[in-house]
Amino acid sequence: MELMNVVLFQEIEKTKAFQVGYEIGYFVGSNFWEVVTAAVVILAVILYLAFFRKKKSIS
Image 1 (cartoon, rainbow, N blue to C red):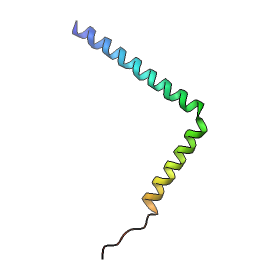
Image 2: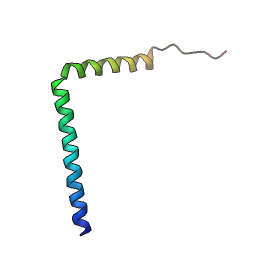
Image 3: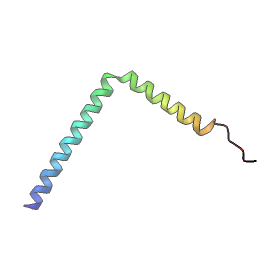
Image 4: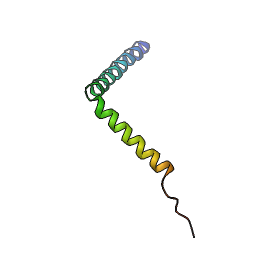
């Protein structure tokens, strides 16, 4: 009986994960250029902060 409950629970979780993935895919597909623009801006900010930020010297 417990094995049946585990299998049923796993199927429910797989269905939820598939639904969330489908919704994310639908959002990205319908807003493709907005998502690409946001990704490029976020990457640019991260790279700027990682490499071009002035180091504060301790004196």
